[in-house]
Image (cartoon, one colour):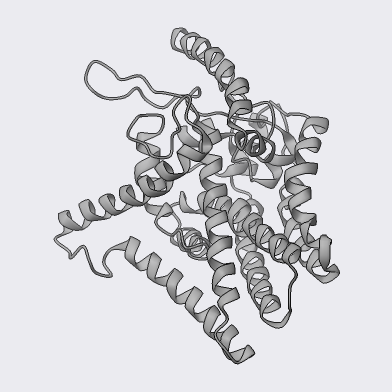
Amino acid sequence: MRKISSLGYLLAFLIPFMVLASIQLSGFYFLIPAIFVFAIMPILDYMVGTDNSNINPEFQHKYLNKHYFKYITFVWVIVQTLVFAYICYFITVKQLSSIEWIGITISTMIINGGIGITVAHELGHKNNPTERFLAKFLLIQVGYGHFYIEHNRGHHINVSTPIDPSSAKKGQSLYAFFPQAIFGGLKSAWDLEKQRLTIKKKAIFSLHNEAIRLWLFSFILFAGITLLSSIFIGHFHMAMVLFLLTSSLLSILILEGVNYIEHYGIERKLLADGKYEKVNPTHSWNTNHIISNYLLFQLQRHSDHHMTASKRYQMLNQYEYSPQLPNGYPGMILVALVPKLWFKLMDQKLNDWKKSNENYARS
């Protein structure tokens, strides 16, 4: 049993600081955040190792009700928004080299997509209207507001079944998964809103449709940024448009890449009554690597999240039968980029998962 390190989750805030420092140094230094997240962090995960323990029962009530853990996600929303605004300002007033464009775009992906969507995911599952609003606000910044609809009302019901666009099949590469997840998720969100509005007898093509509202807010945000930037430089700022679209696309790809590694090849059984078995601890890939779990607010304890979606991140548990990844998400994303390497590593783990699933069913 363990006692939570409250300060560990502040690791996420190192990334915005690193981004701001890197763009002041210029040149190759723009790549520092990317190098830290995708090169140094997997090494740190390997060196520091894992923590498979759960919260000591005597501390559970204390940490469940400690507002600190909720408030740091609120602070993240403020920090991300301010850093994003500064990056857009910086792009407006500075002439960037090719390496600087690459660095600042990847840095924005890490902040808005890697960590930002993780925080949006955390807040979007809560019943508090303020937290749900903040979740949508973060998703608007990457133009992926419909994720809030599809993830909560689609993915969590259909996870690890053939009808879930966010669950990758065995033998499916990351590159084949991207179109399935992106376009399938968009269609799922639209269908869910269509179903909801039909029941309520509301117009589908209207602002009653939450997907349309969220897309509209993203358009207004991006158009507003482009307009202000264009006014400042005295002509239409096409580079800003390309930056906003590219950084948003990369943020979406990193999100769907995480979906890929979280559910690759795992299947829930179809029961005799035509329904799928209830979600259990074996239905998501997990990792207990300490460093990346702090960075990603314990998103990597994904099985428990799917069993109790509203549970706050600091309370998530590790289960004996939960299948484990050999490294944290940043490292596994790199492996997934090389399909042959991914299949060689993960298909054997899928065979082990089947045995674990059978053992869980018998327990």
